[in-house]
Length: 373
Ligand code: NAD
Image 1 (cartoon, protein in one colour):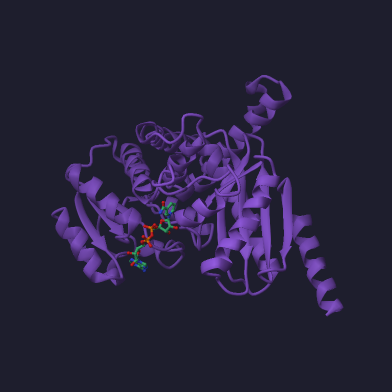
Image 2 (tube, protein in one colour):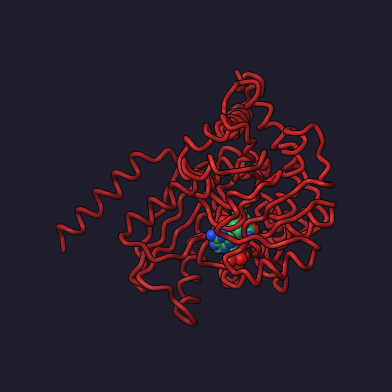
């Protein structure tokens, strides 16, 4: 047992050593026989913000690794979204997903931890948690967003993520064709869930021809029928001819095998981690397919819930106005990619790095332009 413990500590140590973040809080939660990891990757632009993932991992170190990796992704995502927030992520690594009183007690203990950080870490929902959990956490800390509408929160982020993807598709069309007009364009939406369903509706209303694919064929047909579109066999989505392929289901659909099969000019959708391997970004560029980096185009949900943190509380109209900025954020990514002759994936990181450098310079009291040199 002691040897196991030492091995575990060594691997935590290795992970912390290799991580580029600022602060990790590690708590052994004996009551649940689990672990709580809060990773604050960057506070250059503001408090570290990110979701709370509740998940069973093979080892506690896997949970810490996930929190570290995801928190770094949040730093880039929130920098480009220009919300004055840094990147963070929390993982509640449990031996089994708790329900009822046990879940509530775990969320309360976690809420106390978030509160103890004094606003340096702000959290919302992620895989395994939802708005009801955020309401419970809010019983212990004010540093939580993504609460239910009934509790004064912003509710389901899916439709707002869809609004952001909609503006992102327009920005992508403008770059690729010279016009952001959707009329007469064919869109293939893969995944007719919370984001894909709302996105299909927005695209249909804007005059696009919408094709919907979902492993739940009935769901695809229902969404397609409601907007005068058509459904497509889920297995044939990748090879279907269209102007825009919008992956709104699973991640990793863009890999060295699938990219050559694409018959579209743009990939722009909400799914997280769309590139199975970084080389897929180069393959897309070489094939003349414009890729809207996932974490730039899918920021609508986080932009929306972050409005809960404003002094006046959540305001939907204000949120929708901010989400429109995704158009300009993508425009800037595409422009950087063109100027520097790099992939849009690499350009998104460049844009995020420039914004972070500017934030660092501001903090240090140097003129912003100096940071960009
Ligand atoms: P969801 O669970 O509501 O919907 C996903 C849909 O995809 C379901 O209808 C499911 O049947 C379908 N699906 C699953 N596998 C498929 C496949 N192989 N082919 C076709 N359809 C398939 O999820 P969501 O909230 O709409 O999120 C969609 C994606 O966007 C996810 O990758 C999610 O991580 C990402 N995302 C969502 C949000 C948000 O606000 N909900 C924000 C950022 C990113």
